Length: 428
Ligand SMILES: Nc1ncnc2c1ncn2[C@@H]1O[C@H](COP(=O)(O)OP(=O)(O)OP(=O)(O)O)[C@@H](O)[C@H]1O
Ligand SMILES: [Mg+2]
Image (cartoon, rainbow, N blue to C red):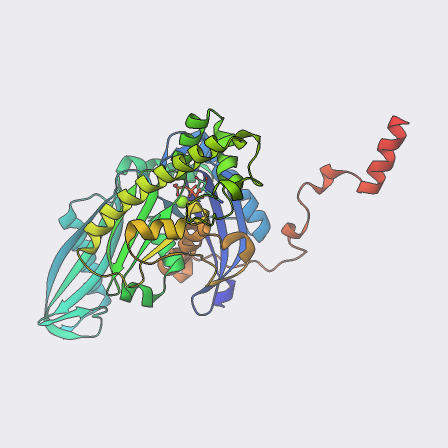
C-alpha cells in the first residue's frame, strides 16, 4: 500500500540541519511523521561544509530526533544543499526516430547525451531536467513518449556543482550512518519550488527565492518549464553579523534581536517596526531611538543588497518574459515582517510568502513555516526518484510509538508535586 512507504530527507542548511520522515499518501500528499532539527553551529558556511565533524554531529542529532518521532530509523535519504558554485546550462540534443514511437529509453538516451555534451563527470552532475521536446516540426511538447516522427529534439537543462563540495556533502551524510545514492543530492531552491508551487504557477511564470541563513537560492519557471537556477552566497546570517558589528553586541544577541525585536510589522511599510511601535518591543540594547533607526537601516541595507543580486539573476533567467505569479519567498528570512512590500518595490512584481503546508498533514505545525519548504520538497524528490522496490515500508507498531513518550522521562525524576515536597524537606 502506498501509504506504508516511508521517505526520508536531510536538508543541510547553513544554520540548521533538518531531517524529515514522511509517509506517501494519495494525490501527491505526505503525512509528516518525523522531524528533527539541529544547529549546524559553524559546520556549514554559505551552504558549504567547512567542518565535517560538526556537520556529522548535527546530522546525527537531527536524524536521531526525527527517527524517534517517526518510530522508524532513517537509512536512505535525499539530501538538499545550496553550496559551492552552481552552473546551469541548456543543451539541445537530437536523436533519429525513423517514424517509430518514442520510448522511455529514448528519453534516457537524450539525458545521457546532454550530460556528455556538458562534459561533466558523474561526481559533479546534479540534475538533468528536460525543458521541452520537438518532434519534426511540432515544438512545445512536454512528454513525447508514445508519439511518432522522424526525429526527436530536446532542450535539456543540466545543472552541475563542484565535485569537491558534493563529495564532502555525501561523505558527511554517510559518516552519520546514512545512504545517499546517485541522483539523491538535490539543489535546495528546486526542492523549495517543488513544495510550494503548483503546475499553474509554473505555467504562468514564477520565481521562487529561498532566503536562508548563508545562501539565497532561486529558480525560475516559464510556460511550465524550468528557465534556470542561481545561488547568491549570502542570507540572513549576514544581517545578523552586520547588526552585531554596528551595535557592538554578540552574534547571539544580534540574532535574538533580529527575530524578537523585529517580529511585528511596522505601519510605515518599513521592514522593521517604526520607532513608536518598537517602543514596547525593544530590549535594553535598543532603548536609544537612534540605535533603533541604525538597526533598521542595517537590516534593510543587507536585505536590499541580497534582493538586488537576486534581481540581476532573475532578469537574466527570465529573458524578458513576464512572470504572472511573480516571486514566491521561502527560507527563514521570509518570516521577516513586511518583507513582501519591501521585496515588491525591488522586483516590481507581486511577491508572496510560500508555505509548504498545502500538500502535507501530520506534523504540520512544525513543518509549514517557509524555512521548511526545502526539506518538505526533498520528500517529493525522493518519491519521484526512488524506485518502488527501494522504498522502505513502515513497520507495524508493536507498542506505543516512542515519540509519544516524553523524551528523557527517566531523568526528569518524580512528578513535580513530589519534587516540590522533597525540596521543601531539604530546605526546612
Ligand atoms: N522570524 C524571523 N525574523 C527574521 N529572520 C529570521 C526569522 N526566522 C528565521 N530567520 C532567519 O532565517 C535564517 C535561517 O533560515 P533557514 O532556516 O531557511 O536557513 P538554512 O536553511 O539553515 O540556511 P541556507 O539555506 O542558507 O543554507 C537565519 O538567518 C535566521 O536569522
Ligand atoms: Mg535552506
